[in-house]
Amino acid sequence: VRREVMYDDLWFASMAGPPGGLSVVLWLDGGPFDDEARAIARKLSLRFGPRFELWVGVAATAPKELELRSGPNWFVAGYRMRGHRSEAHLVSAIERELRHL
Image (cartoon, rainbow, N blue to C red; front, side, top):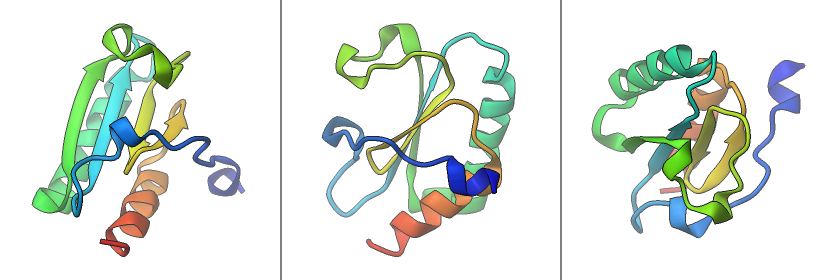
């Protein structure tokens, strides 16, 4: 049930990545989930290797139009996912986007 409720809420072209490629962006806010989010990001990099570009940033430096509140905030192919996400949820989102490339 948890995976079904955690949906992507908005799409942002600036976070979508290069044409024909896949970007995953993680914005951290210094909160209690940052360490776990970093660990998940490392696991995703190992799992998918060069099939996507991963970028990690500090939420305080993010563009205002992203409307980041509490974190972490993930963007997979431009789709914003607010708050803590499980590795399984992110794998599912990345695999869904890779099928469309």
